[in-house]
Length: 218
Image 1 (cartoon, rainbow, N blue to C red):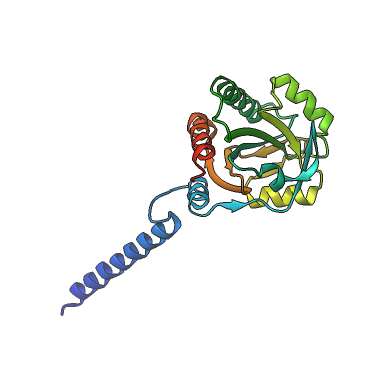
Image 2 (cartoon, helix red, strand yellow):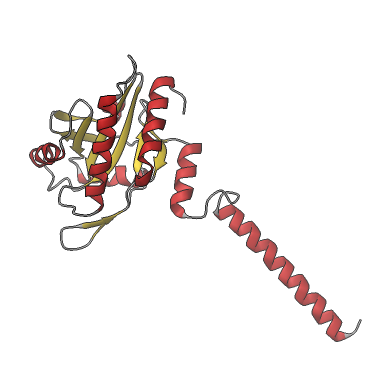
């Protein structure tokens, strides 16, 4: 076989092997091409395998210190959770507006007996966001405590464990504020994160939460 032909064959073989390796790698990284981003992968993983909350305690206005899993528990109860801090002037304000709209719909369309959807805003700035500050923030947003409550995780180590388990990214900026991702997290009565929705998918998140509360099926 002429040398130039042999070199051509070898180059073609190498290109084919690289293409196969690239395809296999992309398939693995994207869960067989079902997602293309880390956030998409996170949502798919949660949907396939719900994530139980760690053993942490919360407290807030009208909420004495108690286990988060215990607060979430109850037949027919489903909770939509967001993570925020009261000094935030950007994405947290958008989250507050989203929860206001969800609260309004829950007030207008009550759930059937035995089913309940609640809203829970958890501050990751627990050293600053005392229950008194959270109460003032809740009043500012017009939160109805029967539907929407605010809390913090008093212990910093527990707060970090909760953020880590639910893959909530919070990065201090060194000036008292934080860079953080934002999403609507749906947790069931067993204290498990079962779905993650984008902030813009509030209608989808609430419809899913209501369905889960009514049927108990994820």
